[in-house]
Image 1 (cartoon, rainbow, N blue to C red):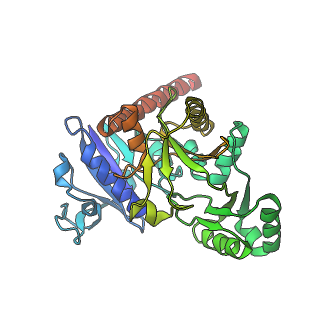
Image 2 (image 1 turned 180 degrees about the horizontal axis):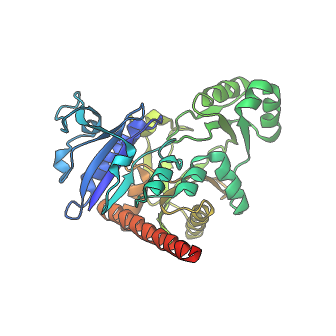
Image 3 (image 1 turned 60 degrees about the horizontal axis):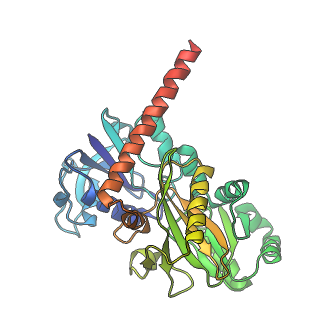
Length: 369
């Protein structure tokens, strides 16, 4: 069976996606699959690379950056781009194939490319259109979590119109319902891109201004001082499994993009040192969050845990990273599922979900006749 591995993309998380794709290529079971990489450039071009039949053919992540060419060949030098064929998205439609979208952020994790896969009628790994869109948008996610009765920190959503036309009212809203420090985030982004901490109004204004460089909607959240950051991995469609919790051990208040992916300053403790009661609550909340967005395949649910035992759901990520430093695969490894088996399980979940959709469509057609 062929696996179309999509990565790159037009979002700010382009480079993270390449690292994720390389990790998958190193661990997939080649006795069952061949992998055809599809590199999406920052400009949105789709480049079809050489078929991979063993991990050694792609020695490093930079081999996955490609430029259009009449040839298809991986570069053996990190400073030289690999070559592939320029294609249209519809060109990858094939029988007996599964799409694995190792894409993060807008145009990859937000339901847009998932809609394309649905139109192409191909199985794909991960969440569907609705769950992807809802999970990507922090404001929509918070509304759904509220409906599900999940505990969250106070927050204020801000539109670009309000910021440009009623800025003083925005400050009044934020300072009237939240206290400093506050955290400012683009509504549709991840990996700490565009996120900043604000300790006063001047910093709040600068943080909101920067967040609007990445999205037309922004969310300002109440900071939780000295909170532990704990994460739970989720796997399944209808039968949902939750991993052991893991904790980010913080030496600073906030880890930015460079800390997570460039300098690798983030330290993890897996499993997190928690009571059985707290662990059970976290896993229950994580499953409820997954169900609230109608998740499928995989997700990672992130929490804040205060010194007095309060738990707040922070967000859910429907396509968490698979890099060597990523929490998601490490959580499953410590729960008893290794990297290769995890990838295999995700592929099987994709096929199962696709077969179920095909059955629904067949029954709908029969009902119309």
